[in-house]
Amino acid sequence: MIKNSKIKSHDNSFVRFHRKGTGEKKCEYGSVQRSVWVNGTCKSETLLWLGKVLNKEQMIFQSRENGIFKFTPPSTISRLSAGEVITNRLTDYDKTTEKTPLIGEEYARIFGQANSLSFGGVYLASEVLKQSGLTDIFTTAFAGTKALGEAVMPLVIYKLTQGGASMRIKTWWEQSYAKFLYPHLNLESPRITQLLREIGQDKYWRIFFKNYSEFIAKQTSIKGTIIDSTGLPKAINTDLWQIRDHGDVINREKRLIVVLEKNSGYPLYFKYLPDNIVDKSTLQHLFYEMEAYDIEVSSAILDAGYYSEDNLQFLFDRGVTFMTGYIPNLKVYKRIIKNDINDIDDLAYHTMKGARFMKIKVIKVGDIGTMNLYAYICKDLVEANKQEFHILRKFNYDIADEKEIAEIQEKLRKRGIFILISSIELSKNEVLPFYYERQDIEQIFDFAKNDLDLLPLRTHSHETLRGHFMVVFMASIAHVHMRRILEKRKNIQLSRSAVFDILSRHCTKVYEDKNFHLPDIPSPLLRNIYETFNVDVPTKMYIL
Image (cartoon, rainbow, N blue to C red):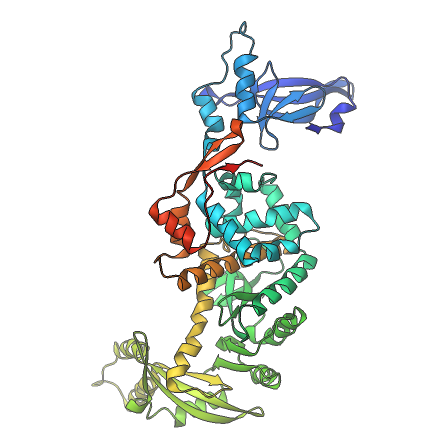
């Protein structure tokens, strides 16, 4: 029951009805008004918007804020269930009026969504995250603020099970088991923006990462990491978005850095910056931030963009083993290309990874800072063939001069070559599996951008952006956790997205007048999915 103090203080308030729309879409709406004098003219002031009229005689309305409710002047709003409204309309309705009660198709439209709700995806995600302890980690940071504590999990589960823009979360909530699991949410678009802004506050960020680092510590004793970054274009202009020239394409972008735990695959930490800040200038600050949250790192696989002698020396001095791509324009790189690649096609250097044939040669490098490092000269044979085609497609030996022939030969000599620098010595068969673990982080970027609505970025404020990233980060953690379960248990050969697509069709029938709902009897495939995640499906569930 809700009372509006603004109305209570005015005894001369009245309910005003008016019609909006045309044809079949024309509806009657109500609002509470009072008369006021403005510069000698009598005008109406709106005290409370009531919404769509369902029954004018009984003062029953429907609005986004209050759902279906009965209004008792001057100020009382009493929310009604579908059963209560139907009972009132069919038994208490004044038969002398010429109007007909709302029954049949119109009631089916109003209450149809509540008769059968999508159940499986929301229920399984909720149960799995509870079992893993991730629900507590996601919500503990916000426990002191009730609205946030109640909102974080539905935001995460929506991203995990449904994906898409947050503006569609209200429709998802209305049509799924989430409306019973999280019954007190206000999911209007301005409220979601406000929630994200609050979630993005630094005080919550700190508590979350402290708790999350303890969770990661229990997953593996080896603290290996993969560090990479990606650009995030955005149309809305704030000072965090800077112009970046990627070849011939000019974008206004932000840079998102993600740290992945190498052995478990869990996202470990993230940081975002204006895109005109180069990656190599962020590495040491990133490590100090992770240190503040007790995130331990013993090894790191880095994208070539993080390469600098200062960064390698920083990692070396901290006892962090590393492997990184080597930048072609550096002195040592040029010396290696000049002196050490002529015999790279020798069969002694041949190795394979999946369908990729490689040549890998290792040499010691002693003139980078004070470190003794290893350089892995790699030749990707598939890439070499592609490059050879592009190099030779316009070349005509019969008309080429000696200078052009020499340039072409040098390009062919270097085709498919890249160099990795590492502080640890590996055999040729260990190098590529070790380095190509970087693909795991590319999968996280792809999942976040395409499945979790990381892009396009529509937020204006720093806090809202942080909240958006935080929700996507949590959903990415949940995604990895579920993927790990599927990889360990081979009884179903389905991806996480395929699992949720199947689960979305497992519905529950709602009987609001009896205060319970009944999940449909699961098919053999559904039972297999639930068993894979160690989740039991109740036959009857009460509406709390």
